[in-house]
Length: 303
Image (cartoon, rainbow, N blue to C red; front, top):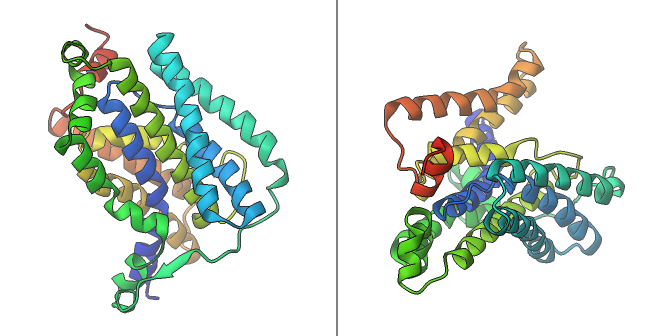
C-alpha cells in the first residue's frame, strides 16, 4: 500500500470507535442528557467484549455482550441524572472511574494476550480499487456498519415518530408529556442507547483496532466523542467529518512514527486532542450551534 492508502486506512480504523460513541452521545444529548458516561461504556465494552471474544472466539457474542455492558453503564447514568437529579458531568466522571476500576480488575488476566482471529472481509472488486480500495473496502463488519450509521441515526431522529419524540424531550418535555408520552422513559432509552453504541465502539477498538486489551486504553476517547457532538452541531451526518478528523490525527501520529520523523513522541500524542480543540474553537466562533434547549440550560445555568 502507498502512503496515502496507509493514512486513509488508519484514519478510518481510528475514527470508527469514536463514530459509535459520538452518535450514541448525540442521541442522548438530543434527549437533553449529556452522557459523559460513554467513556466508561467504551472502557467496559472494550474490556469485557475482548474477554468474551478471546474466550469464545465469537465476535458476534462479544459485540452483544459489549453493547449490553455499555448499556448498563448508560442505565446507571440515566438513573443518577434522571431519577436522582445528579449533575450530568459529575456522574459521568464518577462512572468513568468506576469503569476504570472494574476493567482493571476484570482485565488483569487479559493484558498479555491478543485476539488473532481474522475479522476483515474485503469486498470483491471494490477492495482492488487504487488508493481507496484497501482503505474503504477491506474492513471489518463493524466498520462497514459505521459507514452507514450516521445516515441511520439521521433518518431515525428526523424522519420517524420515535426520533421526533427524542428531540422534543430535549427541547420541550412538557409538550411531549401533553401529547401523552413519558419524557422519563424516552430519556432513559436515549441514554441507554448511548451506552450501547459506545460499548460497541469499545469492543471494535480492542478486538479489531488494537487486537488487545490495556488498562485505560480508551484514553479519553469517550470525552472527545462528547466534545465532537458540539463540533457536529448535533447533526448526525456531520459525524463523518468529526470522527474522521480525530482519526486522521491518530493516523498521522502513527505515520510519523513509522517514518522516523524527528518529532517528540509527546507532541505527536497530543496531536489528536489539539486538533479537536482547534476544530471546536473554529466552530464556536464561526456560528451559533443548534444546541438542544435542555443542554443549553445545563451549559448556561439558566432556566
